[in-house]
Amino acid sequence: MTNDTIMVTGATGVLGREVLERARRTGRPVRALTRRTAVPDGSGVAWYTGDLTAGTGLDEALAGVRTVIHCASDIRHFKNDIPGFQHLLEAGKRAGVEHVVNISIVGVDRIPYPYYRVKLEGERLLAASGIGWTNLRATQFPALLDLAFGALSKLPVVLVPSGTGCQPVDPGEVADRLVELSLGAPGGQVPDFAGPTVYPAAGLARDWLRAADKRRVVLPVHVPGRIGAAWRAGHLTAPDRAVGRRTWEQYLAEQVAR
Figure 1 (cartoon, rainbow, N blue to C red):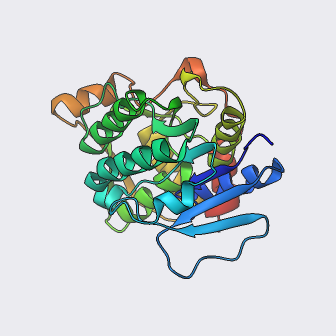
Figure 2 (tube, rainbow, N blue to C red; figure 1 turned 135 degrees about the vertical axis):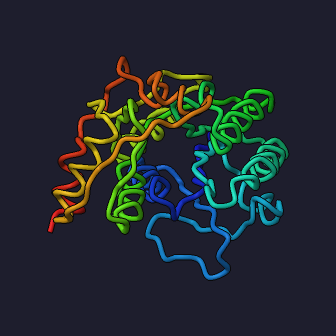
Figure 3 (cartoon, rainbow, N blue to C red; figure 1 turned 45 degrees about the horizontal axis):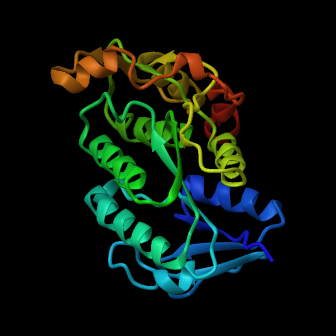
């Protein structure tokens, strides 16, 4: 029998939860990796405890797995992402994993932001791993913008970068694409996946404030240096890959509006 088991890393995160649900719907055997010793209950999902940073529990978790959808990342301790990904790839080779599908971010190759540099290094590790691979870059998730505006709105003035566009994309739609890619042959670097509309950062902030029923002044500020220049050059967006359908306005109406 052909092995068709799918493993999802980062399965408790914003994207990972969506991927896990869609992988389960394929009818294929599905596993999920967590650092927790008390694993979640999940119908149709086999949970495994493993630590990517320490490299523990991975051999058991990956034994018999054909495809890994890698969603694990920790933006608070992002320097751990590289050793964690290296441990995953090494364990994947030992286990005979045939395909690793990785999620990355639009602009990682053009914006010298520290977290983006780590994501780009992860892409390079994947390409050099000797395992079949597919890498998908997506634009920003609305929940991340929601979190940022929630923090910024604690002050009387909401500061946003001037001349900067963002293109929010629904994580469920990105999850659909990741699972679709996981069911096919390794595709290498595939076209980006972006939301339907590019918005100025100031416009996103004003939309969020209206939905949250908060009165604040939105002040665009010039961000100096190479990062600010890259933002103003539009490198956070992919207008030619506006394939997403769910809008920022829909997110606000469902998740923020009071």
